[in-house]
Each structure stands twice: as structure tokens, then as C-alpha cells.
Image (cartoon, rainbow, N blue to C red; front, side, top):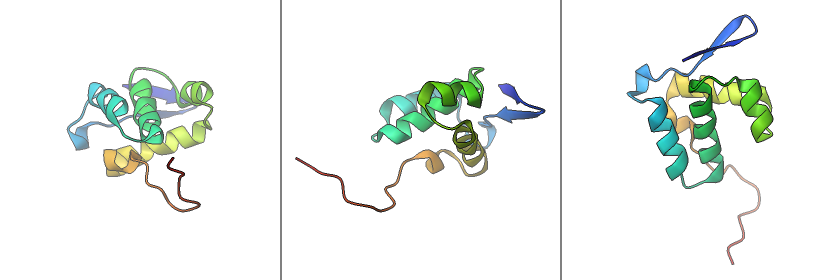
Length: 94
């Protein structure tokens, strides 16, 4: 699916990873972390015809962030969308 963003086209490229839009949806539904779920679902929505601006507006994310997720996926694959804690205070477990 190709989406026009200004004069450039934003596209989720499944070809290098042997995936499909439906595979992204499944990953979104099964991902352990909410941020991973959000990222996979954003790509699923874009592959279905939404723009990064629409997805950003619906999720409260900057459209540039959403576009970065697409570019990371296209360049390095689905593993790049899996959330990894990078620092700060450890989460509270009660």
C-alpha cells in the first residue's frame, strides 16, 4: 500500500521481511508491551491507507515519530519496533 505524504510516498515495505499487513496486526495483538503494540498497529493502519498524520492524531504521537517507525521497519525489520527499556527508574511491580 502506498500513501502520499506531501510530495513523497510513505510505504510499509513487507517484501524484505516476508510479512503482510495481517502479520503486523497479529503482532500488534500479541506483543507484550503496549508501546510495541502501538507501533505494529500504526504500521498496520498505514498499510491500510491511513497517513502518518492520521495515525499520529489518533494515537497522540507526532507524525514524524510514526514515519520513523515506518522507516525503521523498512530498513531493519519488525524487531526494530519491539519496545526495549532504555533506562530510568525500574518499573514498580506490586
